[in-house]
Length: 172
Image (cartoon, rainbow, N blue to C red; front, side, top):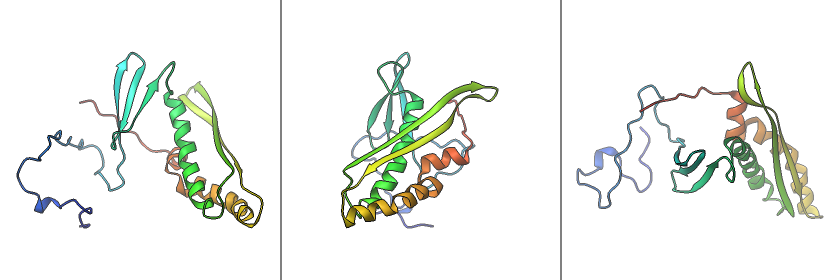
């Protein structure tokens, strides 16, 4: 059994007293889903009006999702790809030099065919500029390798899309 998280007692040492601040009871994880893992991630989507939603993560951050005036679900998927790989690359290259500019574009073709609606031809384009000099040269020299490592094994978002995974739908 892994040790409890820092600052959180394990289940055997919790008191039976109610918490000082009211918290909603934890939702039971549906039996058909695999057990929750330490790397568990989740978001919750709530309808505002027809076609407009608010997405909230476990930290309480929110964003708008929907149709006109909001990010669409497909745009957020592309943003997830861009953000995930950009974080990988930025964290590793900035150790060599601070970029003068750092832009990641992600584009895809949305198609509807016999397989249903999906994206094809997803292209991730890095446009990164480093300063002249030894530090910039060092960052530029590792950039292709870091981008490849992000694509091949580090970026959870693009790896999930590339590998494919089952999605379980539950109605409560």
